[in-house]
Image (cartoon, rainbow, N blue to C red; front, side, top):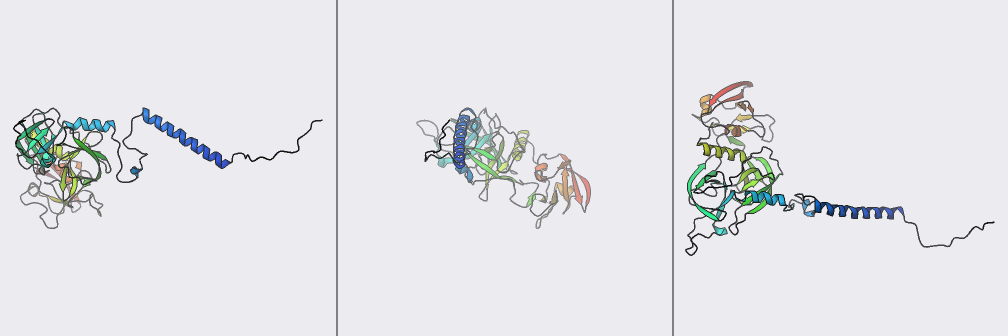
Length: 360
């Protein structure tokens, strides 16, 4: 007959509890995930943002200086020049020596035959020196576009890297940009990143068809005069300009228009209207632009608009079937044309729509 044990010696060893097993599973899962992350970082391209950096939780988000970013900067370095005060040459080396105190701002190359672009905050005449790479040049011609405050300067040189004016309409608030400036202390350029805080920034609620109506506003307030700003695709989005201590960008669409007028030797149109952008002002739900100003004459006397019969409180709906909307204001549409062109304005007067033909 088999003998059965009826006594089990007591022991202090306890079977693992469910809580302990759960903690062990989480721990080994974390280890496995971290190893997989390190492995992936070694074989995959690094993204622009380091998500493990706790600084990402605040506004001073740190951006990893990845190879694609460096490539974009290098791609445009030959297109950005420095503008400096005129200095006497050093006799022993036969050329001037510039410092940060002589730096006036940036200029960008727009044509291969020597035209560069800056703003009137950098240069208001031809008394400047342009430094591009390891060479310097005197300004031999000077043209200002009053509408944008852009300045075009000519140097005696064949330039190999005109800036790429790929205009994009996909401009988003919160988009990160790359700024590029010449460095007087190095042949390499300085660069930095910033964010668009407003993609349709209006300084005055009463707008004029004959002056720039909106800007792009940047998050920071760095005074990097006339610095070009690119998005991460390499498109030029604007040129830096300082207005009332606000750091803004002259938009690329107006830059492109200014260059076309320069190259074709044409004149910007002048319509002669003050108006209120109904869709871009808080409190309004109507679309279109209302001919209006509380103190000035909304339709300038003897202007193109006055001669065509436009009146106070006319609501302009479209130009040549180009509908006026949030991102397509009257000024931006009119400035696509040149003096002498014929356009058709569709307006609403006392609730009745009609077409008005205008020769700009």
